[in-house]
Image (cartoon, rainbow, N blue to C red; front, side, top):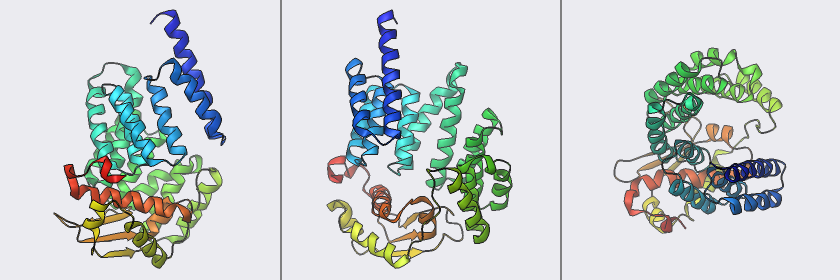
Length: 328
């Protein structure tokens, strides 16, 4: 890299940092302007491409997020850091853990083969995300294994690793183990406290759950206490959202019974938001309102969450027959 390239790199980093600050302070116009300046320097820089996703997500433009993700993966297909970044957006924003997991497996293979010690932290992040994705796709033991691998790399002082392992323990219904693990970190970390609240809720202790959720919300302005969702209202919203699905999915979902239950039972993943049964076609769909209450910050988020869950589950039955044009 010559001096001019270094100047450009420094310029891009500074511009993207300022753009992120603007977005964080609720000024998307300034963020977009700073992003445009960075893109003029190098529109194929990984940080520039990644911020385009962030900008689209801030506008809640799902289509633009998908387009920006496609661009990042097209330009940076051999970059494990880009793969991990994209996986995070598939997992957290698009609620598509299967797509995220595909990217994470490729990234982890490359990171594991790398001799660069500076990439150790990225591999830990990859394993943490992998644990979450495996848990949500039903591979609960695989989630536990990935979280344990992250712990072996990072140690038990890394709160994100402790939280991932506790989440994996929750998903195999080892609630007491998760609560004990989180109790040593929860007071210092809002996310850990929130997860402990979820573990208490799933184990049936609503009093301790409410206390933990309240502490988490006080500790972080980004977290809220669980909202209260009327099951009948959730069912009505689900029916309304289902009626607006793209035609191929609408046909697939027609006549499928939809139920709203409190929490998963038996061998079902305890933190599931929606479970769809049926081998070749959906036969029944079950929403779990007490879990959705934890992840929804407010009631007006419910249509977006429900739509993402329906698209995720129903798209599984379509396979290669469904493309992005069908989802427009």
